[in-house]
Length: 76
Image (cartoon, rainbow, N blue to C red; front, side, top):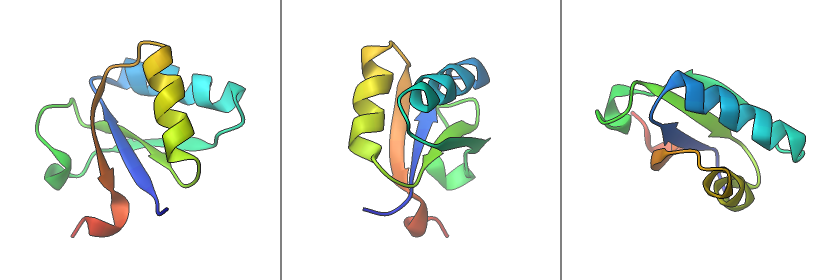
């Protein structure tokens, strides 16, 4: 599984999400969402290189509002 960008509604959700993932041993970074990633978010995503499925489960279980998910390799 390649690198995923998990798009969230706000920078606040991105920061909370990064903390939750870190507490569970998943490394993530916050970055601006590329324009091709969707216009619904405020423009922030969590980049996940490994364990994307587990990351999604944790974020959803902790009420992090996810706007979408894209493969970073597919961004042009």
